[in-house]
Amino acid sequence: MRQLTRRGLLTAGAGDRHHISSAVVVALPERRAELSELLAAMRGVEVHASEGSRVVITIEGPTSGMLGETLTAISAMDGVLAANMVFEHAEDQEARS
Image 1: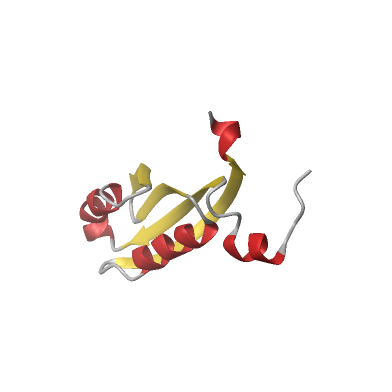
Image 2: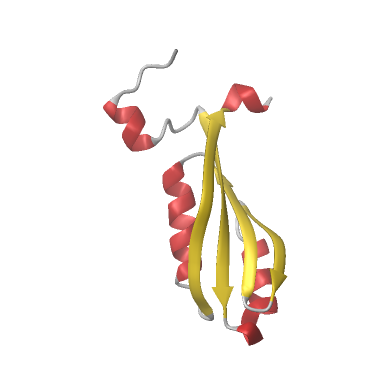
């Protein structure tokens, strides 16, 4: 059993865990297609669906902080009205092998 430490909590176990989250991005309807392409080009981001003003994505990375940084960058994109994380999951790297 892994012991929880302050450093592990602050770094979210950087290096030995893999994080994935789903998010819904709300965009100006006329910019949705363009933003979907920009999102798909971002490292760790995959677009799964888009319709109307919404784009459903997943974000993957080594830390929870990296996911948050990516979501913050998405929120600041021109044409994005909101970007909200829906779910986050982390697992040990060896579990992914």
